[in-house]
Image (cartoon, rainbow, N blue to C red):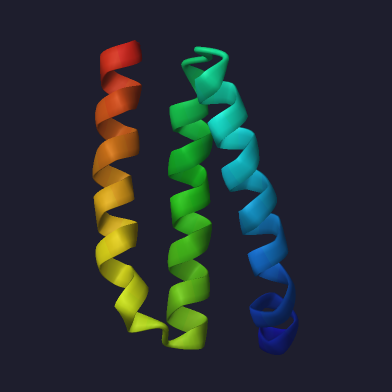
Length: 73
């Protein structure tokens, strides 16, 4: 199961990231909630693959998406 997640989750993460940017470009405040959910999924993938170099990006995007969510609410 772990190998399936490691192999296929990046495709889902990519689709969600693109969708988030489309929502944001259309000024949809839900974009930031979708982005937060996506960062949680990224965090799972980071831990499963031990890709520790992505942790700073993940933390920064949690902050940015959270900030934007609060500002747009």
